[in-house]
Amino acid sequence: MDEIALDTLTCRIDDGLAVVTLTEDKRGNPIDGPFCRDMNAISVAFATRSDVRAVLIRAEGRLFSVGGDIRSFVTDREGLPAKVIGWTSDLHMAIGRMQRMNAPVICEVHGDVAGGAVSLVAMADVVFAAETVKFNAAFSMIGFCADSGSTVSLSNRMGLSRAKRFLLLSESLDAAQAEAAGLVDFVTPAEALSAASEKLARKLAAGPTLAYGEIKRTMMSARTEAFETQLENEAQALAKLAATDDAWEGLTSFAERRKPVFRGR
Image (cartoon, rainbow, N blue to C red; front, side, top):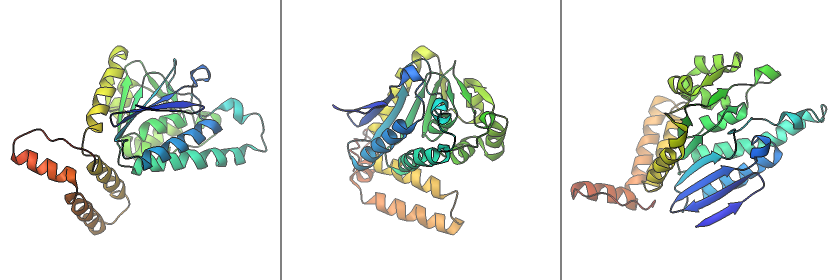
């Protein structure tokens, strides 16, 4: 087992699964400079380590995250624009890297979440939420627009019109409403949340990691590429996977009627 401790989060890597835990629970796990820096650092580790085959993000404390640290915002009016650019430089890099890396990202939301932290949740490949959780848009209520990839991640999950309404009206959705809107994949009782999310995360960590990465990246390019270009993207990705050990294991295990053993290579 490998453990990484940073200022605002910890990470435990065990048997292919990296479990990230937000640890600033006394402050509501806010998005601030140290958090953005730590997210960027941990995303570099994930993108460069072959032993990370799935990532599970969870948080300590009553809340998952309050979103942006408002108290930090109001300390220096003139310096606020530069602060925003500095923080988002790190955070946006981390989000983009996690979207493109091979390892699937699972997010476990046990408590309320707001603002940019909603986008951190939405960028995950699979989202679990306790049935008591509320998702708060929060941006327009303080005169801000959305960041942290919200315009992309929320639109992809909820659809453009529904995501825009969520942001414009600064809506608050309970877990059932979030599931109906596509923001959440699975809603569970609070006491069953951790076990359910970790079970799926470990299943993905034992799966065909390289195939997961190509699925993630080709799904992203499907929204930006011309149809014929996307067909070629699919063909090239599939041809690349056809040369991998995992693809051969998947084919031969199917032919031999046995359970495949994937090793992420």
